[in-house]
Length: 135
Length: 135
DNA sequence: TATCGCTATGTGTAATCTACATCTATCAAC
DNA sequence: GTTGATAGATGTAGATTACACATAGCGATA
Image (cartoon, rainbow over all chains, first blue to last red; front, side):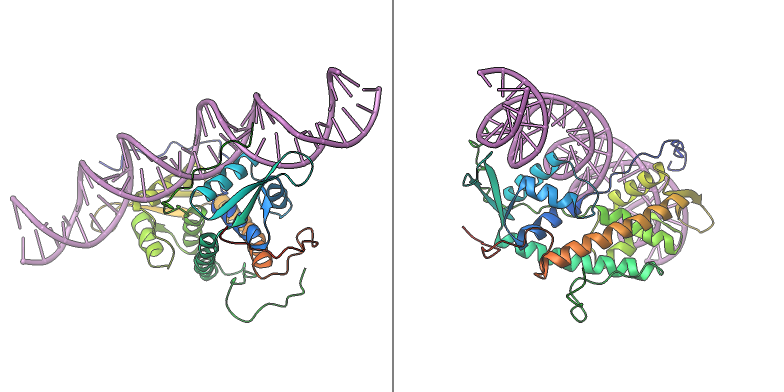
């Protein structure tokens, strides 16, 4: 019996949360560039044109990344103001990021193949290096 | 009281699940190309070079997409064998996919910028060498 | 000084999402 | 009638998230 429960059409299409892996991988990418602390990363995320992430989620994600060994942290009290937990990318995080970029490349290839008309998606690491002076 | 609970270093870095938005968006992309049913989509996913998804998750994701109005479905009993729930992309799903691709573009731009070195995102005056690993 | 506002990090909780195991059912082949 | 492939679904525990709220340092200013 598999054909007796049609979905009742929901009249209110809920927001449909869609921000998953973007957060952790973007955090790793930011940290690959330079060490940073949560508040800073949250601001960087907010101004990156990506969908907004809750700051609590950012902090929890960072702790989670630390728990799995992809980043490491220490308290920074050198500056004035509240202490900051400074994060840096661990070796495992670097490896993970690389493999993620690999997955992302295939993902894009799938989207690209399937969807014609929305190109402009350049693979992250393939083909010749893009002109580095684009904004 | 914010600095008294350092994380106990977990000696076993768990698998770190990483397959999130890829599933739903890839499903939408597949359905944009042609209508399909769950089993078929699961196989397509498996042979796309993406990380493997549980088939139960695929089915549930499809129902979820239907609940939110991004796809629609009907039972197909035209072929022999078990009945198939055929899915097709709804108008809202098409719009959503477009906006997702937009987000993805910015996401990629962020990754590309940070990973290839030409930051410019913020604060260029970091004299310290980035990426201090293995404390 | 006390209180407001910004910085900076965190927690409680409910809702949602996922992997894994398991289940029903159709149908062809043996 | 048993097996194996197809096709879809659920039960459940653990993980993830958004939202609200809490804690604390510090500068300004009234």
